[in-house]
Length: 334
Image (cartoon, rainbow, N blue to C red):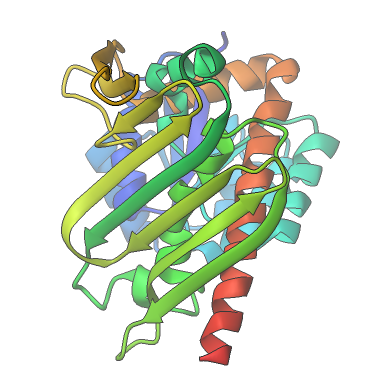
């Protein structure tokens, strides 16, 4: 594959982390970075050996220095930059969540119209563990009727962007709940349709940000996804349970991997007194985040790979919109 030269929009924590992932990914390199301030852009460029720095993301898009744009900005401005990148003929990888499903569809439409790839910045879906579970879902699990996930962590800094409802309107439900929604998209049957939604949120007393959410998604095939996310958990939790008629998979850390790049899950089956369990390790030489950039390079090179990523983003955002709307209604009713 042709090496993709990335232009990074934003210089925050996630951009710094992903710069390292780009460097270890095959067919990937960083061509430029942009920030609202040239000083910040140059500091980022110096830290990560990036050849060009811009104080205008539009100028970076218009330049010949990059082939693809990684949009690591607040949710509130993401759509504008993603669409501008697509119209500039650059492939687009946008951090998540997005403002809404209509916003996502405007982005994916711009990418299709301009013959460029699009992907959201979800890492775990690119790890071989996810591929292994999906590939063997029917054999191991039978009919999957429940996906239960929790992503909770402790965030006490109210100066963090996640506590700013103007920049991140959905708070914890958008930031952490995105992964709950994506787990349902990845591990339930691919043709399920949403039937009913129940959801509840809590807000921070000082900032008004949504700091936790919980609820249930009911699908028309009888399957469900229960979810829980939050910023004020006493411990980090990233649990996932996938229940089927033939077996159950448990993952203690469904968003991460081991230090050697591999990732584990527990597979169990059987009835009372006859349960068997197997710890399964799925090897990988690279973390999911690095593999994300490799998959993006593959989608840039081969248009037949692009549709799956756009559809996954649209389905995830659709579930997120649904739980957010119901959460707001529940809050109003209370």
